[in-house]
Length: 298
Image (spheres, rainbow, N blue to C red):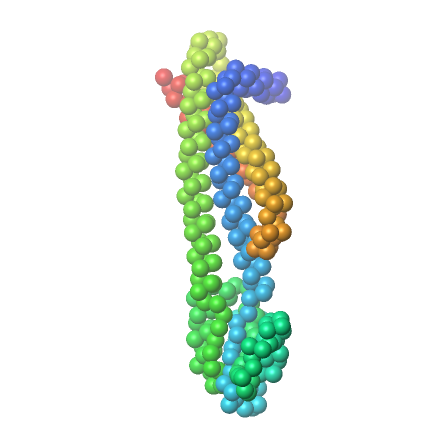
């Protein structure tokens, strides 16, 4: 059995070398297709990292009426704390809100002159539990809180949340569609390359059949050759993607706080890289199987 496996792998390597420029072109083309898949995968991961970072810092602001009493304030705080979506709650008084605003102005406090009494309302800052950050859930929570006695307004960046949620969904949908299209393209490329190799060795295959070789034995080297082409193409794509990512991260990490946050996600995880290489091998095996099976039926 071991000798048979050695023969199959040796035959597959010989076939791959015999393919010459055609085999290299096939590997390079598969590499380009997997590079595009890898770029989309990396973009989705970076976007997810940004969303996760945002969720850590996200809070919902409940602005209070100026005439709210201490008793109403305590009742309102308890009602908000009882909500399943609320992870924690922090109170900011009118004086604290004004002091925070002055710090944010950084030397431009003169803009506040002439405003008279403190114009900023007291508020509750709510941190939301994981799983409650979707636009629909936040909209329902906001509508509920706005009806409570003593609440004047609710703010949580509704438009920004909807935009980032839509962007994440669009990226995932595009990644799936493009991935399926490129996978089909990779199968066709490997299939055509192996088909040429099969027809080039038609006489050799016929002799093997005459001496009693089974279809599985004839098919095996071509399957291994297709798997090698697919996996080598995926490895080539990962290498190019890694070099490009390191260059981009090193160049723009300091220039863009947004990219710096996303870059903390790092490159693809080892399991993802292994899945891409395994996917390349599987695609190569499928494309090779289609060509060899069609020839053997003839």
